[in-house]
Structure formats: C-alpha cells, structure tokens
Image (cartoon, rainbow, N blue to C red):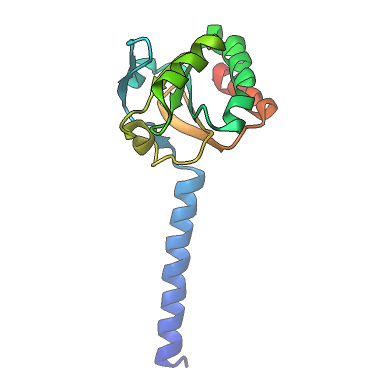
Length: 169
C-alpha cells in the first residue's frame, strides 16, 4: 500500500504531466490567431489585416539599423515578387525606435514593392506578442492564423516551400 506522501507525489506528477501535455498541444496543434489590426503604411494607405482573409500574409518586423534586416531585404523583395500574384501580401513594419525619415529613404531607394509601415507607438509589435527582436517575420494563413514565426533571417528555401504549400491549400 502506498503512503500518503507517495500518493500526493503521484497525483502532483499526474497533474504536471496533464498540464504539460495540454501546453504542448496548444503550441504544436492549436493555431494562434493573428491580431486584427488596422494601420497605415508610409504612403498613408490603410492596411486592414482582416480584409486580407483568403490571402497569405507576411509581416516582417525590421529596422534600418539592423544589419540582418538590411541583408535579408533583397530576399524579401524576391519572395514578394515571386508570390504576390499568387495571393501573398507583405508588410514590412519598421520598429518603434527607427527614425521615420530613414525608413522612408530606405523604402524609396531600395524600391520596396510591398507595404512599409512605421510602428511609431509600438502597438503593432505589441499585438504580435511584444516583438522586440529584429528581424522577426510572421506567416499568416488564408484564415488569419499565424502558422510560422521566424526570429532572425529565415531559410528562404523553407519559406518558399511553405508558401507554395499554403497557396495550394
């Protein structure tokens, strides 16, 4: 027969196991909804994420002072150019501490073909889970769920494979 302390330990272990498995389920299988935001790009055009249902959406948090962000931008442009006509939307969100004139200059001189937005008050980054590291990129599926989060420069080969799979869905 088990002692009372062994029974309590077994019960505690079972509870921890159940909680752990439920958290694992949430992380692996439950989809996280993307925030339903409305904001402006640097041209003053409204971006309404809920209106992009039915399309894939890449949200890239970046900064002009981030060398990795600047280095990945040609690949981001190529990705947008390759998949935009198939249903990909893209927003490059400049972080709160970035200087607006530098962001506008960067977007114009590099001829960024996608939306560029300034997160002046940090609310966009906050809505996406308090993004603080750049680059951070989110892929949102056609139903508005976040299906992938990249911290740092993504593997563009992997990203393209995922985009092609999701565009067919």
